[in-house]
Length: 324
Image (cartoon, rainbow, N blue to C red; front, side):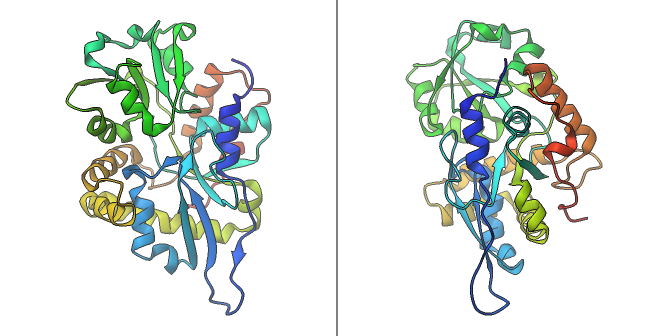
């Protein structure tokens, strides 16, 4: 597959369009304004950002952070988004094929989060059964499906994608308009709660033997170069929120619900627990980006896509921003 899909280009570019840091006029102790965009909407999987906000970790770092809901393939960060949350696959493709100057500054999902969820009554019992079926997904979310298809022996040409908003995926599944939807494993609790009493079958990309980095915090080269201290403070404060959330997912869920009432506290708790399962691998600090694993991630993308220009680990991540 050659070239970067427009949806991927909009996702990565829109999510992390950098702005200059807005410093409030007046006293030198004024907080620096920062806007962060999620990947898709406000969900329980984002609770640790809201924990950092609620418990004052951003403010203690001298930052006034505004968390904006992302919209997938739309202009997620339209305006002044300094930080975003993106999948390395999208970052790699954007860097290689469109020269979009975006890099990861911290990783959150150390393991593959992608999965396909299917109605149990569809009769699909193994990944190979996906051939000839339609899969509902958000724009850009199917980026690494070719890698999964290759690992699982699926003819990717036989799969049809039905693009929809993340909010509408459970409905498509429940009304049997599609037999399967693409969803991160961290969104499983929400999907099951919205799907209803029916049972679902999960095909996780990791079950096919894939091993690579998932999503993390991203910023543009310009922000990284001009505001390294601010980047470090944002990452450190976020990791403080992560530690609290993973130590007490129930409290994290309650905070998420308090700030965003539409997010169910129980679902947020379960999604936070699912994130906690993805964040840690042996001998790696929370948020740390291992160069070897990033090279492995690049190799996975290279096997699935044709890259217009070579990409190395140093091209897609910036070290030194995760506290030791």
